[in-house]
Length: 349
Image (cartoon, rainbow, N blue to C red):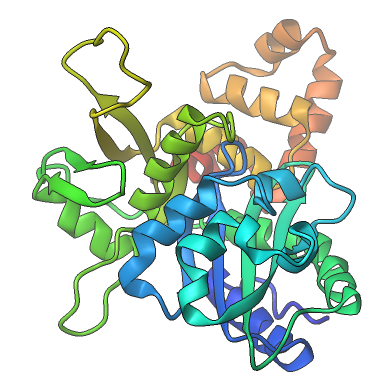
């Protein structure tokens, strides 16, 4: 499968792949999210589903079940799972189907996760309605054959966001905070949230931005509270122009109440802030497929260490440090230390 020209943006890549999958498999709706490679929480959705008004319920249910959850699939022999097979043909065993999909005559979902040794880069759900009928084992095998190359392609898309210096963002708009209830309904938000949400998922004409990335981190918080998954309720996502954000969800509470369950009655708060230097360095290293040693060296480089200091701290020879630096330059397309750091940290030279 041709994954398109190098340098393709992630949304363009996903649209091209969906066009191929539509011709090869056929589907009636889809949801494709990128994920933080470490927390594996979704963001930057590309979706066409018949239940936009029920999006909070859909996302909450997706996170609240281990059935074909992307974090479950990545630990299995195949990176693709079919809903009908996972529930032995009894769709009522699927929380997502019971609570949302059943109202839209969905009869099967093919789910795929895109991972490599550097992290988890996204997951995809392809819905089929009753007119199309369930997927076959051959359909699943075809999708599974694409997961490894697509993981690499999605990772390289993320790497491209670091090539140019990060675009300057306004610093005077105040903190970005939203509060939600346990059904993921937004209760309140700061004024600054509107500006960044409009960029995260641009709305159509005369529409408001859909805060899908907010729903995802909040749903992950609920999933951890229910013991479904133990990844943190946070996600790092590219806003625009090389600028990365970190979203986090946590409970607001006035204090513990005797006998209260975790999160019982407490509001969920989601914060959005500029990604830290450490987060950018980690993402940069993973996106450009740097080895563990190379990422360690990059972190030391960011502290201002010279070759001799890095060699001492890493218990390596200066010659080996230089070899690691050359490898970093080759992988990132940079020609010197200043360029590598300016791209990783989002600063201007």
